Length: 439
Image (cartoon, rainbow, N blue to C red):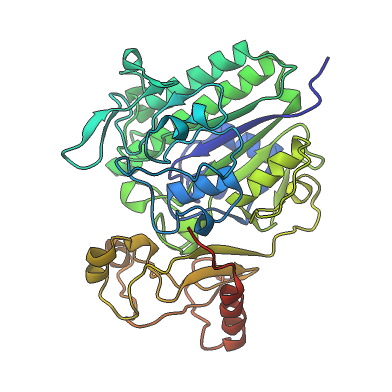
């Protein structure tokens, strides 16, 4: 007997850039990911958030971060915060989402098992994690206990092996939701030596380590897919692959041919790698230009699972018809953020950062909304001000709106705000009409 409901495998990668996959012309070897995407549906108009926690919260709730209290920044390890407990989540590992109360742990939010870390930026081998120099500790957990005995194993390979062991035990007749949230390619840039040797000719140390981490990840995904086939789960599975935000160029990542990177609202910070691979797709081997956002996965997966649940209150849309059959997409715009805690127009960046501490979320107006081809990144594309130095340009202090046609100008070279005032007016009107109730 075959399980009628599909098995879901969601692979979330940390900080993979738009340009860091073979089918986007990368110099990094990702043959497995390239093949899976080529046999499935490549999502070439796919958006996330500029940093991890907001993207991951929207994946798990189907709601924009203005409705979950994550419109400012990430949740840091020592903050007594997590997703609001009254907001339901599908069974996904809540890594990167903050304070370790039992009710905030994965096993307290619908998961039957959990293996992983509860913070970010930890060592990939020792699992030493710090939130400032004075607060360091061991962060690797199996369920609700510290997994001391697993220290020394590389995080990507450890998680891949954990998935394989789980799949061996899983009854193929029981629907499965598996959330594989990998630490790669987030700094610190660490990887076993035998993957580094694949890039001996790469002279840039950061790029070399970053590339090796992705090749290790690519090899691990191959093992997961093979295990799905061995355990007779593959034919009824939907595999979704996504990065949580754009790549970090200062840590070896590349978002070319897009402008900007992690922590910015330029395309390189919010448009990223994504694809769906599944025997259940009605159309395979295609490229989708449908406008899809990370918040859409929640209602999409609920729909595929047969849940008869109202989507009232959700910001995401069920986009399976658009992905699988090429039907018109229900999404026509994305509200990237509304954050009233921001620096004033013309206020120096360093001063604003000291005053409110939310540098990468700063907005000169109140938010950021994209509509079809048009996107106005009101957030100064600074994040850390070093990004503007990297581009060897300064942004005009006091300027509050840019307008770009991201279909015709993906690198966002040509500001059309003055030339197309009606488009700017329309987008700002839509922003003003957006729900204002925030946590």
